[in-house]
Image (cartoon, rainbow, N blue to C red; front, side):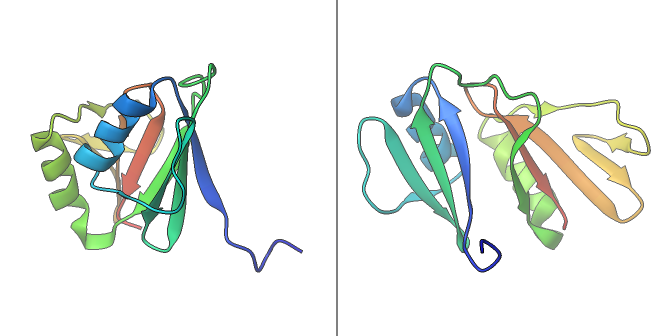
Length: 125
């Protein structure tokens, strides 16, 4: 039923203007489709990211979005840091920290938050 349908990540934010500056300016996402005062839709690869205004923004304590960026991970982390992104550091079983990266064997990952505290994740997957 849904296996052949596309899905989209959906992120609640308090202020769409602040979110727009972050998702477009900092992350470089491009708006797609109809935009309005309550919702902005972005294209990320072949996926969509829906950012909408909600009183519950930032209440999720788990990953909201994950990007698998392959070998570009180190460069993306460096570029985001240069744009002022602060990376989260977690004490996770089986992972060690190397700077802002969490590493387990060949796997590398980094986490950061948007202005509302939504947790965003990039990895070399």
